[in-house]
Amino acid sequence: MQVHNVQEKIGQLKNQLTYWESHLKEIQNKCNHDYQTDSFYKKCLKCQKTEALYY
Image (cartoon, rainbow, N blue to C red; front, side, top):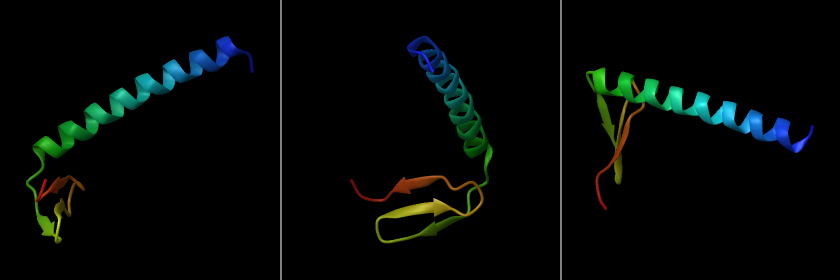
């Protein structure tokens, strides 16, 4: 592959990643969370959203 092709592919993958991150955030915002708590974080069993309990 030439450099131009690699850069084009990287751009396409970045756009796809942005789309999927946005889609995931939308799903997690709409979720009626059912959290399972660990010592340092809690994780939703439905949408896999994770939140730290301590900073």
